[in-house]
Image (cartoon, rainbow, N blue to C red; front, side):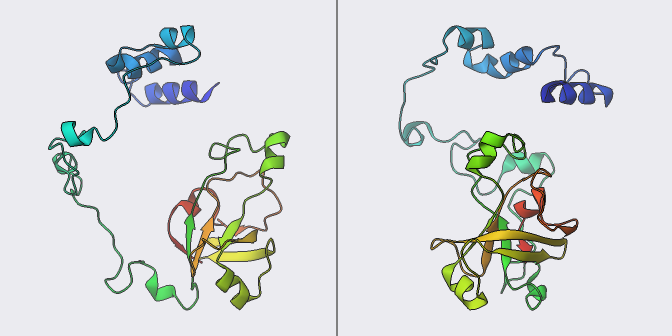
Length: 213
C-alpha cells in the first residue's frame, strides 16, 4: 500500500471515518485544493503549471497577514481558544536557556538538526544507490575551533554521545558552524549501517530536538 492508503485506512480503523471519506488520494488532494479553484485533473492537463494569481510582493503592507488581527501575532488567540498556551514556552533556566544546563560537565555541546539533504525526503529513498552516491552517509558539522581543540580532522569518524545513546559519525569542519554546537543529520534510516549506535542512539527524530552531546 502507498503511504496515503495506510494513513486513510488507519484513520478509519481508529473511528475517524468521517474525517477520511476519500477512496483515492486524488479526492483528498481535490479537497485540499478546493478553496483555490484548482483540481488534480486541471493540473494534470497543464503539466507546466497553472498561474494561480499574479505575483505580488510585500502584500502584508496592504492586506496584512493571514491572522485574525492581520498582524504578526506573538500572542495567539487561536491557540488560547483551543486550550493551548498562547505564548511560546521554554523550560530552560534564565541564565542558560538549555533545560539540560546542569549536564554541561558531561555533555558540553548542544546537538541540533540542521540543513536537510537534497537527495532524500526524511528517511525515504536512502536505499537507492544513485542517491547514496550523492550523500552516502549522515555527518555532523563542527566549528574549526572546536575541531582544533579536540584534535578532530575533517571527515574523521568520531563518537557522539548523548543521554539517549551514542553513534560514530563523520565530522565535517565548517567555518559557518557555531562553536559549542553540533549540527547533525535529520531522519536518516537503518540503511545507514556501521554507525556504531548504542542504546536508542541519537538518530532519526532524536537529533530534531536540542540535545546535550
